[in-house]
Image (cartoon, rainbow, N blue to C red; front, side, top):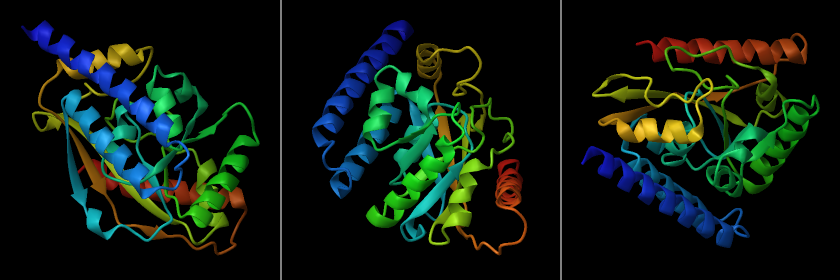
Length: 254
């Protein structure tokens, strides 16, 4: 009976992913449409329901900063993307390897994701210019994971500072830190962690097999960053990244 329930969940999940792929493909010309944002939000909520993950939003969701804002979040799983999309109207800045995810990669791309090629030094600068332009011209908000890779979720790994240049180069962008914690029966769990040599399929099955899973999304106070001009751009990025990580760590371990 348990195996049948898992099989049914997995089948409905595949159907829902394919359906979402087709809907976003048909809506792809509507890149700045509020309707598209609402569709992605609703689709993400259903996807999380199908894998049995409940989202608990903490913080002032109704008091988000004015557009454009950039979400900075810790990174534990592929599920992080859909947890954030179920609550916040954002697109993503992500590593190009995500494009290879079966179907989900295509969905993430059509949702407006901007991809970074870590093997090219100029990639961060190019992405930064794209995000700044789209944020200001189209009033789009983005999210990125400064850890650069997923972790089991016991702590927050060191932040890569490259994309923090967004806030130093343009003071109109607001930084919105968001924390994600995964729990099972209200206790910390690694069930949702997508780490090591685990495949996407293995991760999906692992999550579906577990019950009473929840994702706690903590929206922290937004920060308006001012570039004082002190020190080099590199020092400014690193300092900002470390300070935001410290604030997130303090709340994460409470």
